[in-house]
Length: 490
Image (cartoon, rainbow, N blue to C red; front, side, top):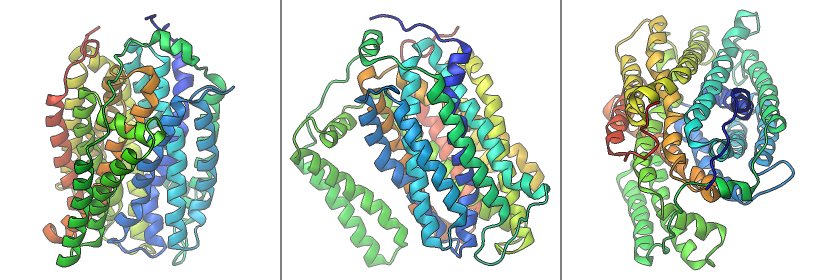
């Protein structure tokens, strides 16, 4: 096994620069889609269901893109064709989204937008694992977090900045304000330009060279899941759906039932298909996950449950509690919604600072302790929303959220990439993203139910549940095994 050559700072910069554009699109989506949905007539109880498009799309797209990108080699390389295809589609979706004439069109465009961003984003994680030696991977993933922070700051601030520049921040019923529309147009241009820079300014190792550099142990194949286990998952989903119908529970809980039944159906289908195909291979790889990946999956579940709660409910919480309005046509609501953009910009700005600090933290404390500490900081930020009433002071809450966000985007991938063989880097990075997507689906289906039955429908308490979830993620880090090179301190 040969050692990969170390890359220069600017080579790492170029290979990660595309994440500036990816996060530009994601930040506009996260900060403004709930606002667009409410503007087009969605009730606050409908918003989580409309958001299901984003994680469900990731659940379907990411493992497929990972599987195929492991097996691709073109003039543009292995991962870069997917960067480019996703960038073109996402740019078009960003242009369409704020011009949606009806709620169902906005929801459908969100599906397309998120699928397109996922086509570009999933191979970017594997790209760092492909190109960098293990000693440089913390710096590579931290560089991605830096660009994520910078892109999100600017994108989240755009409606607020445009309003300060005199662009109309309110519109008639059912119309998206010009501040949001122009922000999405600028976002499309930035997304395409940044990803195009990485496509043109980076290179990739051919598969045979990657094989010579591969130092990770091969993942032992596993037999397909027993038929009884697959049937049990399927029946569990059917039983939960029947219980929801009998008790008259929230319809969003059918998403949980569908996930259980869908997993059982996937295992049965994988057993029925010829071994070696895409679906049987993905199902077998999912069952053969390395131990570190299994333990990190629990950490990711609680981390992303919290983040999705923030993205869905912060606009409703801040406009209602801190600005006193839930009317999307009012000045107070739109001022509050713009302030949410500022808050999201703030946590991403703190994330950019954290991305500079994280490599030092890893050298000082190791990967596991650094990630656990950052998750605790994020929990403190979430829980402070329950106490703070001055919206200006919420900027301080975002400092903790920013450190957690930068850490979530980098350190789990550092711990994971050293355990994966190069031939399956894309597949396993895609499968690892299941544990980003699944908690978002759980949050979208369960949070509305919990808020109505436990907290009187108050959106603010979703952020409290998010803080508790981050604390559970920090505790789960204690079970993640140390890997040989991951805890070395420089």
